[in-house]
Image (cartoon, rainbow, N blue to C red; front, side):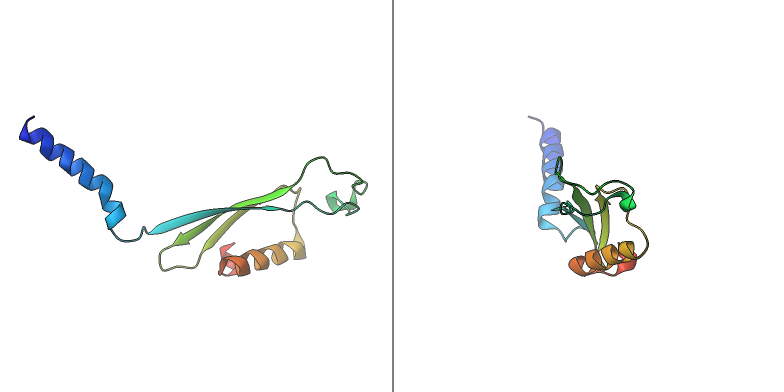
Amino acid sequence: MSSNFISRRSLILAGLAAPAFGAQPALRAATFEADITPPLGTPLCIALTPKADRLEDRLSARGVLLLPEREKPIVLCALDWISVGNHSQERWKNALAKAAGTTPDRV
């Protein structure tokens, strides 16, 4: 083998190993999921449809927690609901912010 090939291979291996020995990454991420299926009898679709009397599919909240270096976490969350409006949206944001250790404006 030529010394040029060995040098290139060494550089590539060193580059791949660098993150393991280097500083923390500038951005870390985590995912989460929760069952948010309303109890039977709960009004659905802003009470425009009959109350649920059976369960066909569970509903979930799924999200990503972004952890930027030296900044408060950022929460991205999607819900299997038609909408979350008005006061309810503020309650969701406050609860998610508290759980993530951040502020509601970062949810």
